[in-house]
Length: 113
Image (cartoon, rainbow, N blue to C red):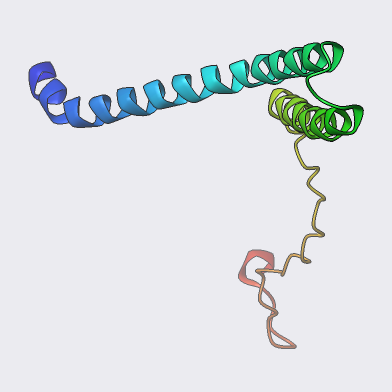
């Protein structure tokens, strides 16, 4: 029985393994993104100090890199913060309808007779 289950579920398990590997690779790439941006900023500062670029070029490139870094850090915070569950408001219940049927006038119910 277990052998048949393993044979039948092996394609799904293989596909799940592939998706996990893709997810892990994407996570590693995102983790390295902020390090890449900070390295680029360090290189930019070095180029400014050695006068390879002008102050105007530095300002423009620094703004782009800092915007990328801010955006990346905001995405990391959003992904790390658990989503707050939405509060469900209770809907008013409809009035329960009586399941009793009224007996015609002058007829007593059988339980009271």
